[in-house]
Image (cartoon, rainbow, N blue to C red; front, side, top):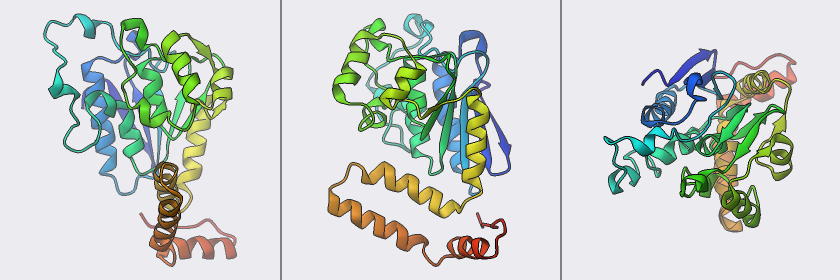
Length: 263
């Protein structure tokens, strides 16, 4: 993995940072590749229980690096736009969709500029905590493009279609307060990174079996027919009920002590 993305671990929680602050963490090809590689690396950690995703410097991510459009060595063709071997998503989509694919909670901390592909990366997370100064935009029409980094899956069911069209057609910049009203961000915090880390640790202290199953349930069941949703609930519950971590959760509560969960 390149130095575009850094990973550090604090117990069961991973801290993932877009690390190109001098360019507002803009997305060039090494950044696209590094984001997917970071998610792949984390997916191999059986003891991982939560992820905090954020940007270095004063901004989360300014979106596409305009040098990508003028790079004579880069040719974006059908090969690059095809799904990669390990995912439903292509290289560009996976910078955002990989966080949805991870089975553990991903909490994204936003501040400053969060434009275009940067916003789409944030939408791949499960929760988005924003600073009051965060500025957001679905900006792709500025470059004559459509938003194509998995937004059709991550924003579906969150924002009504007419509002998505209005934001995407206009490419206008909106603030954290409007983003909260739309449901694009989960909460506004004075220090979104600290809030994200605190919530990630809270998730990590709960049964990892239940936490992972809730993510799967919400991500999958919300788009199924009712009978299929009910069946998935039952299947996931049967998969964790009576197992050591569920039994430990009950014992710890009854004994009024912190639980000790297995990975």
